Image 1: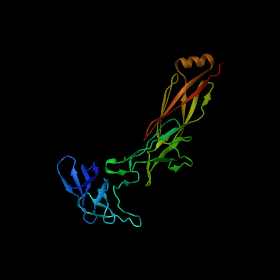
Image 2: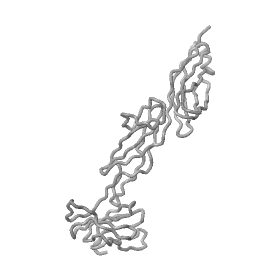
Image 3: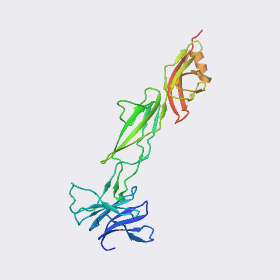
Image 4: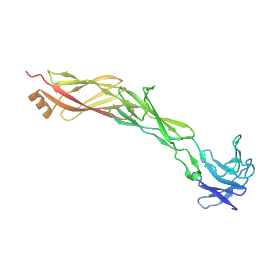
Length: 285
C-alpha cells in the first residue's frame, strides 16, 4: 500500500479492493494475504475509487490522470481493458458507481380469497452498497392473464377475477437502467352460480364452475358436507341439504339460511375457497 483510497468489498469472493497509486490491490477478508490485481490491457493512472460487478467478476475503476479513462479488470487475473466512453467527457473521473437493471431472484405469487387476487412483487437481487453496485427495483408494474390470454386493462397488483380460469400475473421491476419481468405460477379460480332450489324436498343444487380437474368440497354449519372429484374443467352441481338444528328449523318454519363454503383443490396449484349464503325453502303440506 502507498496511497490507498476507494475501498470496496466483494463479499462473494471474500476480498477487499482499493485503488492505490498506479495499481488496483486487494486483500483477503479472512486475513490470509493480499496482492495486486492483474490489470494488463487497462489504464491505471492515479486511480480513484473502485466498484465491483460480482456476477461478471469485474473490478472497475476511474483513472484521475492520463486522459481520464474508465477501466476494468477481470477478477480471475486475465487482465482487462478501457471502456469506450466517447463522445462523453471524462476529465478527472473518480469513484465510479455501477447501476444495473433489476435482477430476478424469485417469481411473484398470487394470493387471495374468493375472486379477489393479489400479485406480490416477487423477489429481486438487492443493491450491493459495499461493492458500489446498485440494481434494486425502484417501482413495479403488473400484467394479468387468464388461460394464457392477456387481460386488457388489468394493470394493478389486485384483480377481481369474475370468470373461472387459470390466472397468472407478471411483475415488472423498473429502475433507472431498465425493466426485468417475472411471471407467477398459475392459480385456479372457480365461480359459484345461482342455486336452484327444490322446494318440495327443501334442498338446492349449487352450480360451481372449475377451470381444471380437482376436488370440490362443500361445508358449513348446519348442512350436509359433500366432496366431489371432478376430472376436467366444466360446471358441476353440488347438492345442498340441511341437517341437525337447521333441518328442524326448515321443517318448522319452511325456510332456513345456510352459510356455505366451497373449496376447490386443483390437481396442481394452491387450494382456494369461496363462501356464499343459500336459503333453503321447503313447501309446507
